[in-house]
Amino acid sequence: MIGDNGDQSARPFRSGFACFVGRPNAGKSTLTNAVVGEKIAITSNRPQTTRHAIRGIVHREHGQLVVVDTPGLHRPRTLLGQRLNDLVRSTWAEVDVIGVCIPANETIGPGDRFIAREVAAIGRTPKVAVVTKSDLVGGDRLAQQLAAVAQLGEETGTEWAEVVPVSATDRLAALAKKSASAGADRVELLTGLLLDQLPEGPPLYPDGELTDEPEETLVAELVREAALEGVRDELPHSIAVVVEEMIPREDRPADRPLLDVHVNLYVERDSQKAIVIGRKGARLRDVGTRARTQIERLLGTPVYLDLHVKIAKDWQRDPKQLGRLGF
Ligand SMILES: Nc1nc2c(ncn2[C@@H]2O[C@H](COP(=O)(O)OP(=O)(O)OP(=O)(O)O)[C@@H](O)[C@H]2O)c(=O)[nH]1
View 1 (cartoon, helix red, strand yellow):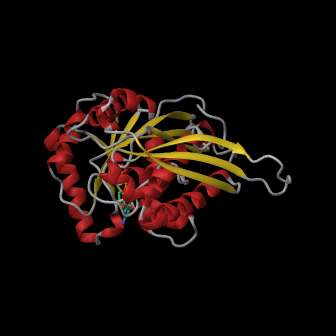
View 2 (cartoon, protein in one colour; view 1 turned 180 degrees about the horizontal axis):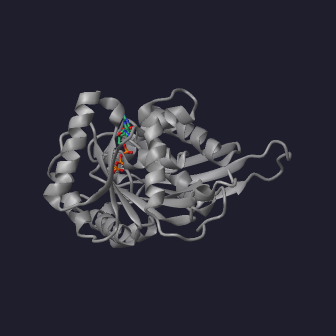
View 3 (cartoon, helix red, strand yellow; view 1 turned 135 degrees about the vertical axis):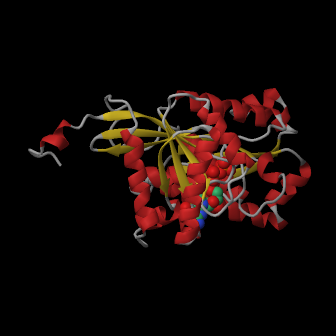
């Protein structure tokens, strides 16, 4: 609102980058989606789901916040693991504010301390502690966790600019108009606090743009998300997805368009291929149906999804294959 309120109109426009860090499964991707208000990053209950630095863009009257989603930092066991860690560190060094995510329902452990120390070393970049998944605990436990997070800051030499509890899932539900709650509202509060930490500057992206990721990447991630559901052990890390082609079907009436989407899903071994495809192809059909629904929502057009499972032997350890698969 532009009025004659001196304070409001004098408020400078701020813009810049934020990232959420935290150990695997801390809720970083879900929080990115909740802050941006759209499904930009895929999520799953398997650790290390995130592989790409995906940006979501938040537009507010007085600022623009670009959220970069990074993988969780972890002990690298493969070349992919090493590259992911490098990606995380280089992202941290570039952003204007870091949100350190710590789940409300889990005791603070060595992983959180490791990350807090790493971010403390990044010097002057402001750090906001975000206590995620606040919906999973009661008020007493939440209060204890907030105190533990303050303590973590002291122990590791990290100076928290703010400590904020949030529920990203409640926020996403509220956005879908299903409910309202304090945890959901505090996502908006967090967004404001992050914006306050940004330098003054003009918008970095056009109004209304929610992400600068190419559509192909988002589509590939939606397919990977569908494929991850229900698979176990090492298989999630062995799945890579590449969109080969997206072309509008010719000879369709203008009011009934159809987009042909050709996707290859790579696994590392024959046995994994069999699991992904399932008995008589049942599992792959199911993955295709779920992915197609999400892709149609994202792109706003009916889609024909052509999904193939291929083997890229031991791709996680092979530099050439990593390159081809976009890492
Ligand atoms: N109840 C509840 N669950 C949440 C919330 N945020 C995330 N989760 C769940 O926690 C799990 C991990 O969430 P992600 O957002 O994928 O976590 P992440 O930190 O991005 O994980 P990596 O990509 O593996 O590093 C998923 O099952 C989410 O649904 C929340 O606010 N409340």
